[in-house]
Length: 74
Image (cartoon, rainbow, N blue to C red):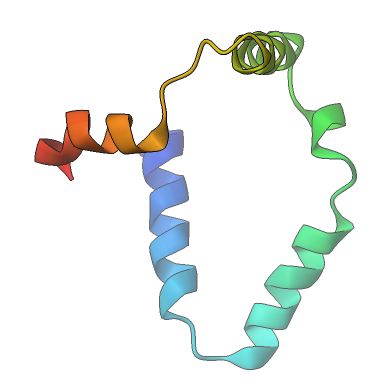
């Protein structure tokens, strides 16, 4: 099973949980994470920086336009 599929499986599982103590344990794992920036690759950081630069330069598409364009797949 690929990484994306595994993540989706976990998301589906978490969204169906009703056990409050288990949710709190998962939240504690999340809160233990340090700065996520420190845990991503240099390539991922570069991509984020490019995206932020494009955003700051007005090189972006408004959410409404994106949703309209891709609504047939939603």
